[in-house]
Amino acid sequence: MTRTIFIFIATLFLFAPAIILYESSPNLESQLLLVGPILLILGIPHGAIDHVLYQRSQTISNFRFIATYLSIVLTILVLWWIFPIITYILFLGTSAYHFGQSQFSHYFKKQNMRTRLLFMSWGTLLLSTLMLFNSAELDSLARDYSEFGSIHVLNSTLLLYLVVISGLFTVSLIFIMIARNELLKPHALMELVVAFMLLVSFYLLPFLIGFTLYFIILHAWKVMQEEFGFLKKSGVVKNPIDFIKILSPFSIVSFMGIGLVYTAIYNQWLNISFGYALLIVISAITIPHAFVMDQFYGLLFKRKFYQNEQVID
Amino acid sequence: MSDVLIIPPDDAVAFTFFTGYMAMLAASIFFIFERGRVAEKWKLSLLVSALITFIAAVHYYYMRDYYLATGKNPTALRYIDWTLTVPLMCVEFFLLTKAAGAKLGLLWKLILASVWMLVAGYIGEAFNPEGGDSTHSFLWGFLSTLGYLYILWTAWFGEVAKLAASSNDPVVKRGVRTLAWFVLVGWAIYPIGYMCMPGGWLNTAFGWGSENVDLFYNIADAINKIGFGLVVYNIAVTSKTKGEIKTA
Image (tube, rainbow over all chains, first blue to last red; front, side):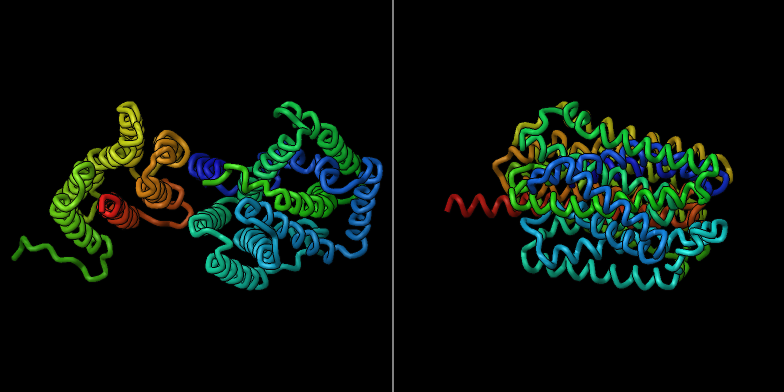
C-alpha cells in the first residue's frame, strides 16, 4: 500500500458517508461550489510545471516550449469549435491513458505495449464507470444545457459496453502481467482493492464529489509527489517551498485565465455555460499535459527512479 | 417440541450464525491441539488464537439462539464478543513483533485504539434512535473509523510495519504483512455492516436493512477470527520447519 492509497481509504471511510446528511443528492452546481476550489487548488498545480519536467528530457528553451504548448492549446480550442464530439472523445481518451499511467507508474520497471494497454484500459474503466454510475446526472445536464446535449453521445448502453470490455481487458492484462513476472501479486491485489473502492465511491457519491475524491488524492497528489521526488533528486529543488515556488507562476496564470473566462461568461461576452467553458479549458490543458507526463514517466523509467525509491510496500 | 427453534431454509443470517458457531469451535480445538506441535516461542500466540475463536464460539452460541428467538440483531452480545476478541487480535500483532523489539507501549496503543473503535461503534449502533438517525450514525461511525485507521496505519506504515521490516525472520515479515491485509480487507467488512443499520449510508443508498448487518458481521467474523489464527499458525509451523532445517 502506498501512503496515497491510505489517504484515499481514510478520506473515503471518514468523510464520504457525510453524504447521507444531505436531504437529497446535491445538484451539479452545488457540487461544483463544494469541490471546485479543491479541484483548482490541487488540480491545477500538478500540471503547472510541465515546462520544467519536459526540459529534463529534451533540450528546449522556455519560450519555444511555451509557444508550442500554447499552439496546442489554441488548436484544441479551435477543434472544440469545429468538431466538438471528436475533441470531447479525444479528451476522454487522453485523460483515460494519463490516469492509468499515473496509477500504475510505480509498479513497473519499464514501459512496453502491455503496460500502455493497461494504462488505457484501466483509465477507460475508471471514466466509463464514473459516467455510467452517474448517467442520470449527466443526462439531466445534457437536457438543461444544449451545448452539453450536443456532445452527450456516450449513452448508458454504450457506457455499459465500455465498462464490461475495459474491465475484462484490465483484469486479463493484470493476470498476464503476473504470469510474466511484470507485476507482483500483492501489487495487483492492492490495485484490485483500490479499483473496487473507486467503483463503490463512484456508485454511492454524486458525480463531481466521487471524481474529486479520486482525482485529488489518487491522481494529482500522487503526481505531485513524483514530480517533487524527481526534481529533488535532480537537484532542481531542495524542499517543498522550492517546489511550490516553481509551480506557482503557471498555477497563478491558470487561475487568472479561469477567472477571465468566468468574467466573460458572467458579463455575457461569451455565450456558453460556465461548466461547458470549464470543460473546454480543462481539456485544452489536459491533452498537452498528458503528452508531457508521458515523456516524464519515460524519463522516470529510464533513470530507474522507482527502483531506488521506497514508495511502495 | 415447543422449545425447538427452527432455522427457516431461506434465512442466511440464521444459517451463518450456526456455521459461524461450529467453525469457531472447530478452529479453537484445532489451535489448542496444534499448540503442542509448534516451537516454544509460538505457543502463546497460538493460545491467543484459540482464545479468540473460543470466546467468539461461546458468543455465537448465545447469539444464534437470541436471533432465532427474537429475530433481532444481538448487538450487545456482538459487542461484548468484539470487546474481548479484537484487543486479543492486537495482542497477536504485539507477540509477532516482540522478537523484533516491540515494546509494551505498542500493545497498549493498539488495545486503546481497538477499544475506542468498538465503544464508538457500539454507541452508534445500540443507541441509534428508533427509525434511524443519519447524523448519529455518521458521527459515531466517524469516531469509530479513527480507531480503525490508527490500527491500519500502524500495521502498514507504523510501528508494527517497521518492527516487521527490521526483523531478520522472513516468515514474520510475511506473516505481519498478511495480518495487515486482514486489517485492510477483512476488517473493512465491519463498516459495511454498520452502514446497513437504519439511517446508515448503505441503508439509505441501497435500502439494505438490519438483516444485512448480521450477515456481513458473521461473514467478517469467520474470515477475520479464523483466518487471523490460521496466519499465526502458519507462521509458527513455517518458522519451526525453517529452524529445524537450519539446525540440521
